[in-house]
Length: 442
Image (cartoon, rainbow, N blue to C red; front, side):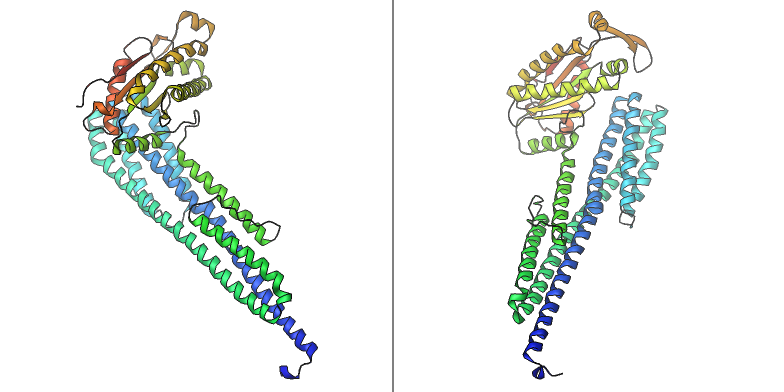
């Protein structure tokens, strides 16, 4: 029937139906687009962001394992084999988790190289078990090191690709939300043209929701995960707002994993320490590298158990942090290398005072770690790492201090080598001692 023949009532009814159709179309499209964004964002957090974190953890763990293997070759100490085995188990677990998370072939190169490195590591371990140190060292240099470099490069390429994918996905989210926003407004304004009073309330809600969700999407794409969406309620908008907030919380949690904090002391670990070392060296900032090691800790741990040993590690870490906060500089870094080893990065003028205070407070703490019998005796009997029964004194501390002023070309590796040499000398001395490298640049 031609519209001109419709009565006024029917024209109003037809106009109302058109308003309803346009508004319904706008609402349905907006809700579908927002729900799709919510589903995709949850999948992004569950899989792709998790894969990126696992890749970083695997790279870090592989680097730690490579350093351990090189330390074994340098020290020729079979007692470090269990440390290598535990780190290797951690690597395998991280690799399995990553492979299960992304079974779509994106990890093909990483999996191939990981398998090759694992085979080479088995061969290297066999040489170590035979105490064939020279052959193991040659195998490490000729086979293990190149393979590890290839694996690290593959992980870096995957990480870069994953970061680019995440960035592209966030841009896609933003574009999709903008398109949905514009189309929704187009449909809504078409309905408003027929009957503004009928469609006004719906248009206002959609406009407000889409604007806020667009802002939230852009903010998250820029890394501002705490940006509030500002939508409440039990409808799809409220659900999407809560999903955005939950995604922001999860992303912040994922970021906090990169702090590399030690679980016992909550102090920064190897990655943060190495990064800080490199930054200070690159910035030509004079600093003192204070390496702290507990003597006879293994014997203590064997006698009093893992929990008591963990308590010692935690209390010593807290004490070192308190002393550094009291006597050091605001910018000083207190790190936990792992086990019973700690690091302080401070200025050369504070190094000696820090060493004296740390040793003084540590020696005051030590008696409380022992039973009355061992405390009175000042020692106890136990087996060393070779199974020989001997007397062990109470815990003591060795501190080696190397400053950038001691080295012509300071580097993290050079500082580590000098600290290791000094620590070997200190461990031959009775009680707690510290040694400052006072030699000129060399």
